[in-house]
Amino acid sequence: MRSLTAAIRARQAEGLFAVIAEVKHRSAKEGDLLRGRDPVGYARLLAGQPVAGISVVTEPVHFGGSMDVLRAVAAAVDVPVLHKDFITTPAQVDASAQAGADAILLIAEHLDDDLLEELAAHALAVGLEPLIEAHTAEEARRVAAIETPLVGINNRDITILEVDDTDVTRTQELAGLYPPGRVIVSESSIADPDDARRAALAGADAVLVGTAILRAEDPSGLLASLIGIGWPA
Image 1 (cartoon, rainbow, N blue to C red):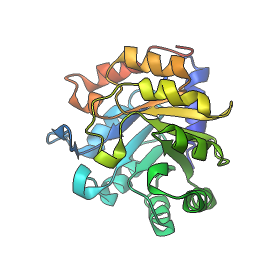
Image 2: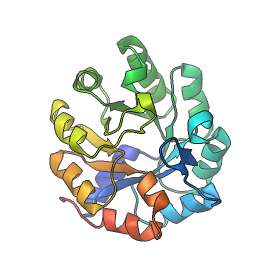
Image 3: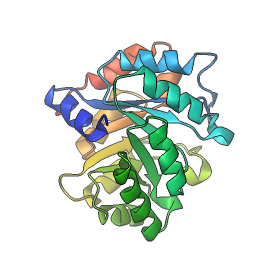
Image 4: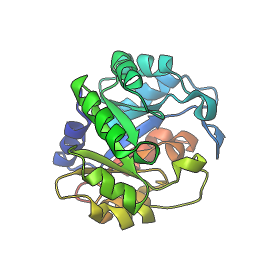
């Protein structure tokens, strides 16, 4: 398994800011994001930079993804691959591992405490690192109670498909609720190096950036500028 946690720490040790870039076909807010680009070719473009990992969104109805894309990307790149979807069953966790993912997103909003712990434990048992995401203070406290090194803060509200206009304020509000030593990923609403720096100063170890890079005229250039804020930021 390619460890996403280890990759984030490795980028930090190199003095780089850890960025997880994303392959996402479309969003409810922005529409078509790939704009005819091959998702595997785009993933290889991202992996050409010193990213900490690549996220692949597989949810088909709202985000246009598929497990086939996850399999293809996981086989095509050498960096850790994070599987993003609405994961609610052990069977989905198994499918993620079989597709070649290295980490899997679990969304606290969609899971009660027992199921969240069950899925996190099952992910670890099949060789996946769970990234457990919170959006509210209550969810962050729930996530903090689970013994997992990798935690996330979604700056947008997934319950409305992330169509809200927000910034990294949510990371600033919630990062301190996680115990020291957790690897914190700030997700969504990262548009430029200033946003990434704000997230880092709030306590984030990494950022997950999808739409901004996908929409950029020069995706590689924007990605390089995010990584280039350095560590410590």
